[in-house]
Image (tube, rainbow, N blue to C red):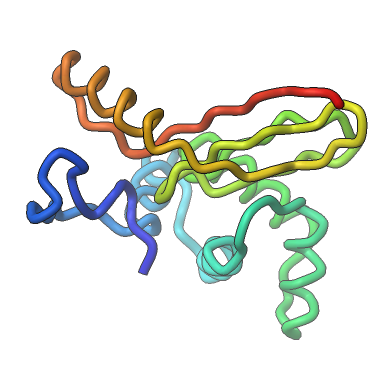
Length: 154
């Protein structure tokens, strides 16, 4: 089950922190807006949680409709916006017509984006995670994730 935040603290790997499921994060955000967590919204979130890496809203529509579900394109697009507003997903700034998203929680999402061909290269930078945790600790906060995007050309 996907959860909001890392399950362990990087400074003490034996300490386990209880974190809430992403559906709870989304439910709370919807409730604050006077909206309901519908079965359609739950299916959309579950489908996104199954993705690895980046996705487009149109892919989400195709995948949901391919499962034989009755989810309209408008519902998917509205839900993607609500998930973005709730901080569950975020938009990745690529220079293309269709917006591209990725899950905001969990493992860090560090990317190098080649501006000459829009290639997205995932990178792992443990030093950045350590720096993130140090900064948050000094501010009395606990990081849930981070995103570093480096724009580069050949």
